[in-house]
Image (cartoon, rainbow over all chains, first blue to last red; front, side, top):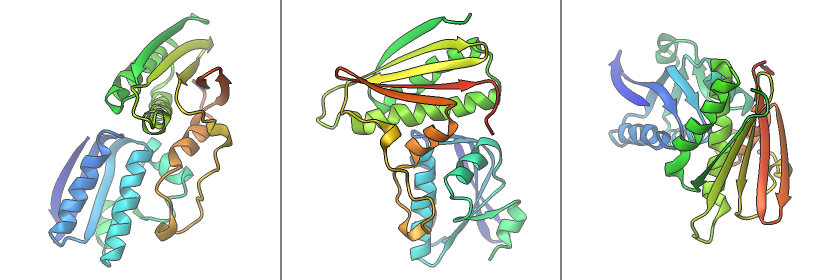
Length: 110
Length: 143
């Protein structure tokens, strides 16, 4: 798994690629927490190139989102597909997160 | 060929997760499972294997996970994950609350839920001091 940090229209976009399993999920969470520590509390996460996520990955998303909500920030995720989308869907998380079809829509999501 | 069985013993340690996944993937190739099913199989193995690593041997002893797969039918792979840890039947575990909002959403419990949803079939038996969880995945999607 790789996490690439980009700046798009003044906002942080984290492009996550590959597989988010028990071993790699902590690295995603660390990256998010590093952004939060810098005062970046509106994070867009692009999952278009993520092919796999396990429950450990879901834990990271839940944990980071809770932290951001406490800081009146938000995690917006976009471009979920395939197995990743299924996993979010059947665990009921699709309705709890701010989910968008595209990076552009996520950036405009407020 | 149908009925072929292979087995592997690993330490119940997260460092062995990829070895477990690779082993079962060999079976997936033998069963000619399509790519989409292999992703689901990875998920099943990760959730079951990690559950044993995290909760199976709480007293600190070095535990084992015994993996076995067989081609139970054409295009169907059956996997047994066995351990000598704390007796745990995931089939009777309480389901996570999937309706609560994010603030109250518990962070655990999703792994077992995912296994139940993605496995084609799943059985558990306590065999003397072994937990034996058997599940299957087949070429046809259940989705």
